Length: 186
Image (cartoon, rainbow, N blue to C red; front, top):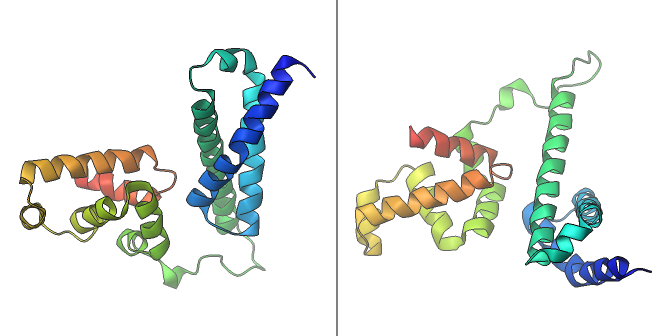
């Protein structure tokens, strides 16, 4: 074993549990999801191995690894969503439609769904998620909320703007919320 092998092995032992927890936070539980998480952890370590010379000089290699894992997971989710969409829209006369036409869900209804709200709370925290939901999804006016929280309306609008940017930065997790953010920015 070389020095680089030892270094990567230590990095693996130090970060595997953290990466697994991060994956569970974003995807939740389930055997298919756990397999996806484990595969993307391996992909992140493959990339770390490929860039080991530069990574050993990096000021925060553990942070780089977490960011790399997050990107691998996002890419895998995008690929999986594309596969699901292809399957949903493929023409097969024998199969029943994957998404029945009479069960179309509006963006507003989807944004209010429990899973999206739980994911939003994990990303933003309970207080900020509630603020975002009240202002951007449920359509409450900023003035009464600002008075309720004891801040100026300008400060509240700035906070909401920052929350929107955070959601847009993680748009692969919040497709519907990101769409609502973009609509409300117009």
